[in-house]
Each structure stands twice: as C-alpha cells, then as structure tokens.
Length: 116
Ligand SMILES: [Zn+2]
Image (cartoon, rainbow, N blue to C red; front, top):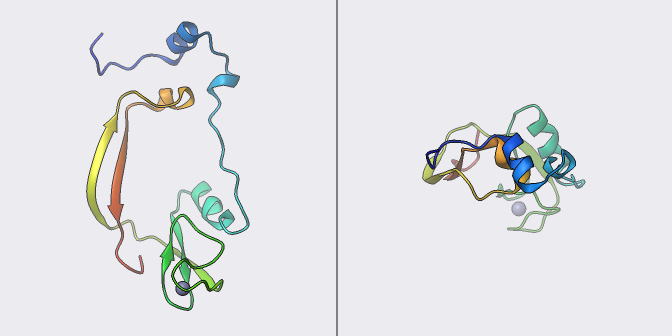
C-alpha cells in the first residue's frame, strides 16, 4: 500500500474495533446568531454576517459586531471569489468520522470586502 492509498472505512472499523456510532460525524449546534449561516450551508451557500452600522463582516458569526458592538446586521452571500494564501491536502490525522472523506483540501483564503 502506498502512503496515499486510502484505507477503507471497513478496514478502519475492524482495526480499531469501531461501531457505526463511533463514526457518526458531529453536527453543528446552531445558536440564534449562527442559525442563518447553517441554514444556508444546508443549501450549499456561504453567507456572512455583515454589520449594518459599520460594514464589518464577522465570521464565524457573533451575537454582535466585533468592530462596533452593534447588533443590527444583514446576511450577505459570498461571491466565491477571494485570494488563496495557503492550502494543504489532508491524507491522515483527522478524527475517525472524517476518515471516509480523505483526502480533502483545507485552505486559507480571504474574500473581498463586502463579498458581493
Ligand atoms: Zn459594526
């Protein structure tokens, strides 16, 4: 087996004596201020919380604006454009529930201000 060949989930279960319950992915627990983000994610959309007073975008979303502490906000949809700073391809080293998804890419990027 090469170092990049994926291990089947059944092989992992057998090696580690895991059950299907052990391999359930944890689900997010939405708060009242993050629920719109998670609802959009279910629809495969990325929305961001934008302060209506100063225009600051907080992600992850907070109860109030981290720049001016206002709680007036709007949800804007990200354009999908941005600048990629770095990425890595994960081949191992993740919790068991995510092994079936390997390899996957983790990236660090920024979006243009306003994201429209
Ligand atoms: Zn603000």
